[in-house]
Structures are given as structure tokens and as C-alpha cells.
Picture (cartoon, rainbow, N blue to C red):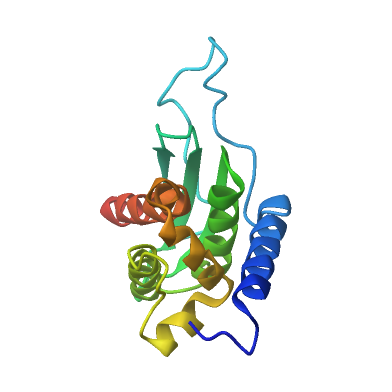
Length: 181
């Protein structure tokens, strides 16, 4: 990743600020998932409805047992080809990394075709596998926009799953929505 003339410490501080800002003001977050801590909640009974006409909707619940992060991702896919991700919203709780990653993912994939969103998923997955080295592909770095700041997370294997939580949910929910068509 380019350093834009900053020192390593300056970049780390800038990245931390971007992550904290994204987790403080998360995009796409809505409260819709059942409260699983409530004994009256019935797991698996949430209703999935599309807000957009001629869209298929699906949800995926993801849980990271190592740290307790969890998120339910709701995706709406257009029925016409090329299939477009018309809406992505999520509900959940977790660390600033998981919340920031979810927020950045919403900004990146909403309005994109499913193929474009899956390419972004792959770019982000590759970034998380880089062990802090980043990507060798400048075009991929540009496609990831602000999500590239999560490169530092890839140095810490225990935190990678936090960053991938929402992305895995988006991929699963997208596949479920397409299967309904």
C-alpha cells in the first residue's frame, strides 16, 4: 500500500481514526434482528421482506465465537440481470473492527452488481490474507476505498475474523437471495 509520504506511525494513527469513525457512525446499521438474549425470542423466525419491488431478499447471521462479535446481514438483490445489490443493512454488536468493516462493506457493495460485489469480497479477503503486507494490485486497493485501512488488521490472526464477519454474511445472504430467484 502506498504511504503517501507519511511515516508508519502517522499512517497507523490515521487508520485507527478511520476505523473508530466508521464504528462510531456505522452505515447500514438498523435494528431488526431478534434479541437472542430474550428468552421469548424464537431463533429462526425472523421475517425477510424486500423493500424494493422485484427484489429477492435474504439474511445471514454470523457469529465469531473467539470474541463474541455477531451480525445479521440483510441483502436485497434485483431479479433482473445483471443482478444488483439494491440494499444492504445489518444489525449486530462487536468490536470496532467488525463494526467498521460492516459499515465500509455497505458503502462498497450497495448498488453494485453481484459480480462486482463478489470481486470486492475477494479483494478484501486477499487483503486479510496479506499478513500486513497489503495488496500488490493498485486497482484492487482503489476499489476497496476506505476499507484498505483494515490492512493493519491482517497482521493479527485473531482479528482477521472480526473484519471478515460482515463480508462473509454478505456473501452468504447474496447466495441465499439468488437461490430464491
